[in-house]
Every structure is written in structure tokens, then in C-alpha cells.
Image 1 (cartoon, rainbow, N blue to C red):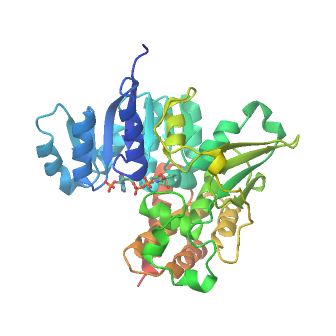
Image 2: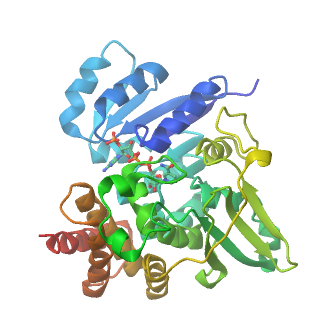
Image 3: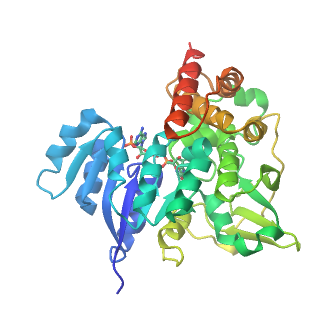
Length: 384
Ligand SMILES: NC(=O)c1ccc[n+]([C@@H]2O[C@H](COP(=O)([O-])OP(=O)(O)OC[C@H]3O[C@@H](n4cnc5c(N)ncnc54)[C@H](OP(=O)(O)O)[C@@H]3O)[C@@H](O)[C@H]2O)c1
């Protein structure tokens, strides 16, 4: 039997992180965990550490360090805390890292991990939106494979024939349309937190669920696809497919569409990202073709959901605009989830941040993070 793969999981306590651990748990002969990181959820991190006994556990929230350390004191696990500790842990050598922190907070750990691992399975889309070129260039420099986990990008990855790149007419990202697809503009404006978190097909973390409701998620995915597949945005289309059965498509010049289909279960793309170039069995949900609903497609309603066109403008404007789009959205979604603003305020905050940002030269990680911080501060000031 071949050696077990050494895995690092960033954001283990989140929705994606728990699905990764579920898959790893199903095939312990195939994987061993080097490190797990969490944000604030110390109870879950303790439970995960006891279950998987990784070599290292890191919690971002330093105030939870002693709880974590005391709870795991009888186990041979090294414990650390803080942002820097999360960035540092990724310099431990692994075979694969799953990047599933939410937000741009995952950028430094991803960049740090690149020289120390063979494959990075990226669910954490915000770092690609803010710094896609930097991530992809560093990965190419070190020969590290970037494997998309987002179901749409994972689907494209599965059907994207690199040797036929010249014959790729376009990539088509599918979108469920979110919980407000059939709502009127007026009703959407008054949507509550609970309404926004009720995704019709997927169970996910809070931030991405709100992003799906505004369609900012699809907008971030457009920028993500541009970087992951090195495709210009005029060759990336978005189509609403409410059943979320076709996870995305590639159209070739000969008229063929290649698509990946499956149930709406993140364990399918995650299994592919954990086992590529092979496959693995999962206990995830299965698509039953005979009982599946009819597949339908619609255009995006840009009047109700202006974020997609805004993201297209950002891609045209350049990296600073993409950083601002993402940073202002992170601030606005957090404010919405904390009942400081209404759903209708999210897009105007992003628009205002884009109009008012001071663009600094973006030469490296520090300047990107500085730009991100300055947009966040401005976006915070729009929230009274
Ligand atoms: N959920 C999905 O099905 C899905 C699908 C496609 C792509 N994605 C992408 O994958 C990423 C994770 O999504 P999710 O839904 O799993 O989010 P989530 O459930 O909110 O989990 C986020 C994870 O990141 C940790 N975290 C939060 N802030 C952090 C910080 N500042 N530093 C370090 N760790 C931090 C959280 O820790 P605590 O919970 O312990 O605080 C948790 O482990 C997002 O970028 C999302 O867009 C998710």
C-alpha cells in the first residue's frame, strides 16, 4: 500500500473544513493530518484534534489558546495561536493543503504554504480575487498545483482540456440564483438575515450564503475563474441554473459542451481535490438521474443583481478594484450579519468603496494587504 498523504487543513472548523475531515475520516488508510487550524470555535477544534490527533493545532483567536492547550495537554499535539501562527504552520511540509479559511485572511497562509506542499486545494476564493496573479505565479514558480474546490471551478477543472485551450470557446459558470432568484427587487431590499441564509440547494458558511443571495459569490467566482484558468473575462459567462445539477461547463469550438454533474454536496469536489489525479469513494449525496428535476437555464437578472456587472468592471479596471470589491463586501456582509446594516445596503457600500478608493502601487503581498486594509477602513466609515 502506498504511503499515507500528509494533509494540512486551514479553516478546519468551517463548513468546508468539516466536509474535508469527514472525507479523511472515511479513508484513514489514505490520509494523515499534519495540522488543523480554526478561527474562534475552540470546542469544535478540540473535538477535531482529539479525533484526528494531528501534529499541530492552531487557533486564530489568541484568547482561546489556554482553553485549547489545557484540553489537549494529554495528547502529543503542538498548540499555537494567532494570525502569525496560522501563517507559520503552513511552512510544515505536507502533500496537500486544503485552504478553507473564509475571506482574505487566508491569503498569507496560502502563499506561505506554496513552497512547502505539492498541491493546494483552494476553496477560499477571496485570496484569488484579491491576489490571483500573485498566488498563481508563486505556485507556478514552485511547481505547486492549485486545485479548485469551489464546485463550479472544480467542475471546469474536470472538463478543461488544457491541450485544447485554443479550441475553448468559453467557460460557463452555473449559478443557482440564490434564495432571492424569484423575489421582486422590493422584497429583496427588505430581506432578513434568516432569508439570506436559506440557500435553496447548498449548506454553507454564513458569509458565502449571503454572497450567494447578493450574487456577489458568482461575481467573486468570475474573477476566481479568470485567474485559475487564465481566461479573459469575455470568455467566461454566467448562467442561472436553479437545480444546481450541472456545476459548470466548458464550450469548445467544435460545438461540444463538456460539463460535470452531481448532487449539491461539497464532498464531491473535495474528494476530487483530495485524490486528484485519481478519484475516491465518498458517502456523499448522489444524483439520481431518473428522479432529478428537469434542467433549466436563465440569464442573470442584472437589474436585481448588479454585482456581476460590477465585478466585470473591476476585472477591466485591474487588481486594486478587485481588492476593493472583495474587501468592501467582506465588511458589508459582516455588518449585515451583525444587524448593523440591511441587505439593501451591501451593494451600495461596495460601489462607494470602489468609487472612493485610493489606489496604491501593488507590487507584493504587503502592498496588497495594505490596499485591502485601507478599503476596509473606508467601508467601515460608511456604516453608521
Ligand atoms: N461552504 C461551502 O460549501 C463553500 C463552497 C465553495 C467555496 N467556499 C469557500 O470556502 C471558504 C470557506 O467557506 P465556509 O463556508 O467553510 O466558511 P465557514 O463555515 O465560515 O468557515 C470558515 C473557516 O475559517 C475560519 N476563520 C474565520 N476567520 C478566520 C481568520 N481571520 N483567520 C483564520 N481562520 C478564520 C473559521 O473558524 P471558526 O469557525 O472556528 O471561527 C472556519 O474554520 C470561503 O472562502 C468560501 O467562499 C465554501
